[in-house]
Length: 405
Ligand code: NIG
Image 1 (cartoon, rainbow, N blue to C red):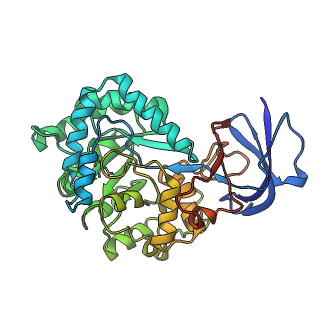
Image 2: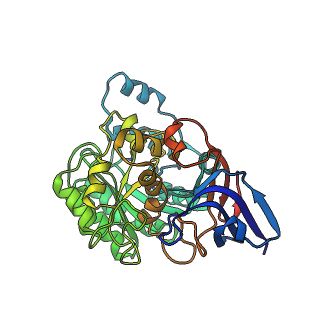
């Protein structure tokens, strides 16, 4: 197996408690793993060597929330929103129609293109959801296509009740034959617990059916107003509750309390117990902006001891971007996070939201044994991610050991 020494790293953010932040550092990768991290002066020669010329490096972004399997375009809906119309879950049906009409090859081409777009901006680990098929066959084919291109697949049959269906019948399908069809293809099951989608009792049925099959749980909640999403997610031990735009004090306390003694925004957030078992608040700032909602209360969550992730929510309706750097800059410039907190949330936080943060092949961290995911910036420090917002700073990307950009 070829080993590659990546040296000349002016500033290395590892997200590892012991390694911390290094200067004049080097990383050795071999196959799909990081095998050595330390001062450049102490690195042993390897088969291949790349000098990044004093630039900053960090773990690749971990994007824990996307919806990449879709067809069609919602520019008109976006324009109407920018002219003052409110976002509602109704636009999802438009994408469902287009997705059902698309061929497998068309859907796969879109996923491939968006994954490439994300990777070229430093994303190295991605989750994506079904949720625009909403028939047994269409959800299964969306899951099959997603599984070919992303690291983690989530079943979101409970996105909306499709037009023409009756809620009870549709839920019986989601929790029965649809779940059975996607089970071999997905790790996670999600439900959109919101006005216009599924209420608390309906959402709970979906979560219970998923848990009965041993699948991991996620919840879309508290996006358009306060509601039961967070409480439900925490009570069922979901790995994340995503959006969290509108939170009551009880919601914030429940999220913080789910980490047994609490996480923090620091590098050891939630790691005291050795593994991620709480419910991560996955915040989607690009979506908040694109739907003209307030930005989620990131600072309030961190101050309370909750564990926060930042994700793109790339989808054609509420957040048509794959840019994690945009999310990081927004979290710093408008949500009160420090650069380190925002970078942590978009790497380690995402890994925790996907429970991919521990053991061999852990992501969101640069240390021996971690997956070889590295993002080099054309900048001397991660601070430039917020100091130079909107500037494409990605200079090199290794994903699972392969140079992809
Ligand atoms: O996470 N909230 C529900 N689902 C997506 C939106 C999908 C859409 O509008 O097409 C979201 O924002």
